[in-house]
Image (tube, rainbow, N blue to C red; front, side, top):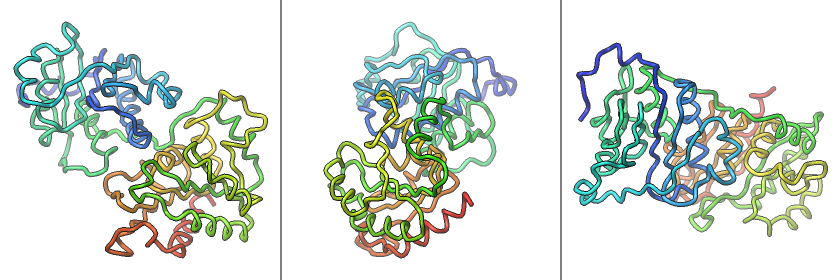
Length: 352
């Protein structure tokens, strides 16, 4: 249970040398959700700059060991991918000493399953932070008049606020090394107004993608204004490339047309660096949408079955358009191109 016996002095204690972050025990393989966790990770590093951070990312392969690894260098010191809590009542009887003899100054529990929270609380620790049951099991709560958050990133940042006894909101722009910035400058040289378009999304069968022909029409309106459409096309959308090239011969596809860029410079860090060279971007609710937002570009995000109140990108320069505001069915193709165009123009002015 939440302890109120800790002294006020301890609430201001910054002598935290070891931190455990528990994300969950299910596979953590969604790019978008992992991008949304980056501000939380950065807030921990800013609040406790000298601490060693151990991250339990789920049972199995981890994005932070794969395509997102270049982004977390210097933020995560250890990854654990074989620690499983199934969340059933039997766990309370058999998991008395999780992680055996290891001990941490600070443990973050980022999930909301109460059994997993109770088991994780048995990890030897000095301070335990959990939002489960509105911080009922946590040693500390966020300062001020805390209210329940809906956005994933805000929920996570409230954990850091509880641990540090202050609100910490890091920049929405993820820091990148020069190699990524230099590659982006090669692919999108100075002297043009670039407009990013990301028509894809994972789980396309769920209706998350605004129609491709609407993205093409939007690109044409930008060309009329003297701007250059820049398409972000992932491996799953590669079959779209020939037709997009045919219809929009002046558009750019920097992740595929890579003259002058080393083969090793690719993936989400490159997309973030490219985003920094755009004036505005339009994307579905998708991993690439979150990646572009983390690059710092003003965003227009399109939502069909998913809710912007839960999974909006972490950025202050954002317009969200939800299909349910245009049609009760919630079909994403109900979002009018005129509305998207108007939102794009409004966001375009953010970098004027």
